[in-house]
Image 1 (cartoon, one colour):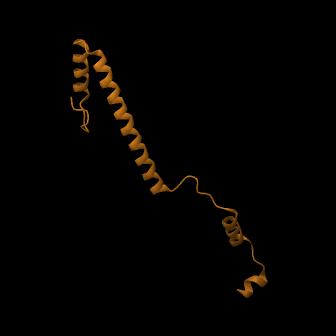
Image 2 (spheres, rainbow, N blue to C red):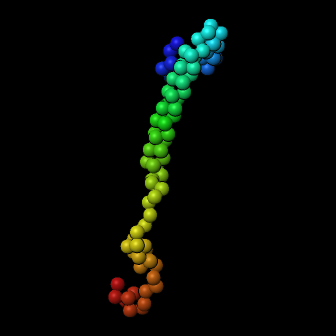
Image 3 (cartoon, one colour):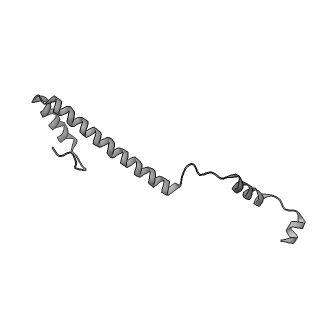
Length: 89
């Protein structure tokens, strides 16, 4: 049975597992199920990493925060200016 193809027909897998079970190959069947589950978990982990990277590229890091200097610059831009400051600029 080929377990590395990208599109595995579930019905085919169930059929093979059923045949193995009815022919007394329960240990081999369990080993195959374990192998398939490990492959699926590894593939899923790779997909999760790719998705996280794509989301980070698209939306940026969630932990980006302004530091105090950046906040003071923004505050300075929004402070009302006196009439003397307006005339000198």
